[in-house]
Image (cartoon, rainbow, N blue to C red; front, side, top):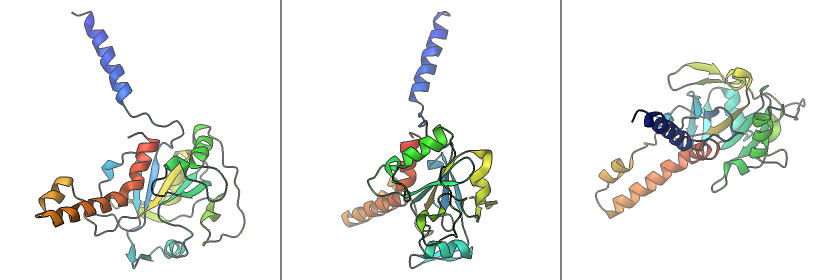
Length: 237
C-alpha cells in the first residue's frame, strides 16, 4: 500500500496541473483596468483575477459625457482621443505600441491596431513573448483628438485610485517592473446594481418581471463583457 501512495500523489498533481488555466504565452503578466469614474459599489473585482483595477473618482458622467477632474483627462475623453472599450499595449519601456477597440462578437486577439495593419495578438507576441521594444516613435506635437496619436509615446500620466482609495501615478503603474502591460479603458455606471441570478429571480413576481430581470442581467453582462473576454482569451479563465 505504501508503494502506491507516491504514484497516486503524482497522478493527482498531474491532473491538477492539467486542469489549471494555461496563460497564453503572449499574455501580459497583468492587465490594467483603467476605469473612467468612481468604482461601482457592487462591482466585484475578484471575478477578474488577472486585471488590476484603478479608478478616477473625481470624474462623473452626465448625458454620456465625462465631467470633473483631472481636466486634461476629461478633455481628452470629450475630444474622443481616448475612448471606453479601448485597448492600449505598452512595451517594457512604457511606450505605447498598440491601440485598438473591442467590439461585440470580435475576439480580443483579433482587434486591429488603429495605426498599423496588425492585430493585438501580433503586438503582444512581439513585445511580451519576444520581449522586443516597440518600433514606433512619435515626436510630433500631440493631437489629443487622434486616438492612435499616443502610439510611440509614453501614456499620459494621471492620478488614479484603487478600490481602497490609495492614490497612484498611472505611468508608474505602467512602467512598474519594466514589463509590457496591457490596459483596457472601461466604464461601469455607478448606480447600476449587480445582482446574482437568484436575487433577480426572487424580485420577479410575475412573467413580465422575469423578462425585466433577464434584461437587467444582460445589461450587467454588457458592462463587464470585455473584461470577461480578456480573462477567457488571454488567461484562459
